[in-house]
Image (tube, rainbow, N blue to C red; front, top):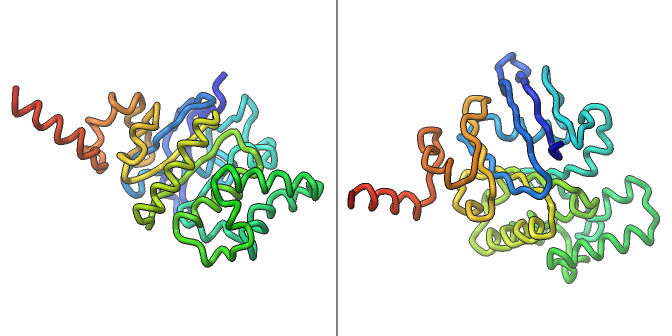
Length: 249
């Protein structure tokens, strides 16, 4: 049994437009899945089904065999989602308060909250920023804070929607290292990004969506040479390499 099973998933937008059409995916524990596609392909809509932020019109998403809709509280602790707009997830007056927000709402004991928040901030290199105001953080630090806010709940799956948006190089490097470390710790990572070369070498699977459907699914090296027909830019090194090979032959 896969960790996440998506069977014949379909969903419509409020205006009746079909957003997802017959999605079938099975995601193994500990995998790193790169979800790619042009704007409007259905990536974010699919991600929001994984922890029940959106419920399907038909079909089903299961976590360890249990339908997501059957126990939303359980699923949202085990599948953490980092949104494209990090500011939308930041609610605390300080970095510490923000990371503690989820555990406090679950009425964890104070001692447990303090221990988990401290361990989480240390794991992403933000211990020294614990008393800082979130609005003073850089873009990369805000994105890492958003990750910390879901990491403190110890989820098995971390879903990231365009985590490099509007980040400069230092911020991108910080977030990329955090993601790589999380995967190295055994967490399942599912990520969407328009700039696939940032995570191409980290991913062990690449899923391409177009018009609400899955159109390619396999190892990144098997899939990547087809992506430009779906409006996705191929990593520069691979594109140049393939053009040189074609010219030489």
